[in-house]
Length: 328
Ligand code: TRP
Ligand code: SF4
Image (cartoon, rainbow, N blue to C red; front, top):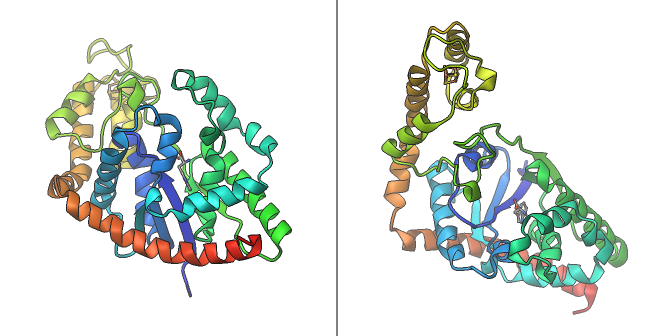
């Protein structure tokens, strides 16, 4: 039986950090087993917020693909491509925009929120309002059965389904497919300062740390403030570091750490050493691959070229049908 298909994208607005790794990439890697996957770099979507400062987009695109390959996205099984290489996405975006009521976009919660949040970026643009229409084009172009996304993206997927229903209603039949979501858990790892891990807060652990910088960052992390010395008992729930153990440390050791923390028999430095060791074990094969791909831009570009070839084939078939029913 054919595997169901999934499509998902990441906006290239900077290096990927541990939050992306735990929340998105690990998931993407394992989905390759059960799905035919299309993973793409959404560079046009990045432009919606970075249009005044677009120079990071191209390098960031290569950087992201390098990271994908290093964590185990396999371009032999998975179609890896760049959105702007498939011009048909922009054509489908245009055609879908013809049938998308303005009110659907204006009530989109991410539009309302981000507009507030990114005031300094002047985001009251036509392109930004149309963001979910472009996202719909990305998804339905490949007849995706499912889309792995975080909770924040759910309104966009709902909008995609509404646009598909309207399209199929107006033009008849079932030319476009309604996508379902695969909801991915947002990992509960805070940034170094305890706030949400984010590039813009400058508190992120990158996927591409060196052993030294990783150690430095972990050592600098705030722990339970009640633990002024090793003799003061603490509470893992009040510690910024402990959530990391949930991802990198086995359950038995974790329980030992938790009770050691509460009974003041383990110190924070010791606890951090355990985490560093476990993170190094998980990341060293990834670091090796990142080092291997470093500077090999031609190889990365070639992966994108192969991916674009496969994606374009399907995109053109979809567009033939869409153009036909829309008489253009
Ligand atoms: N909007 C998504 C995000 O910011 C990125 C994205 C663009 C996407 N096109 C997509 C995700 C299509 C899934 C499917 O995370
Ligand atoms: Fe956090 Fe570990 Fe220190 Fe407890 S011992 S406060 S879990 S770093």
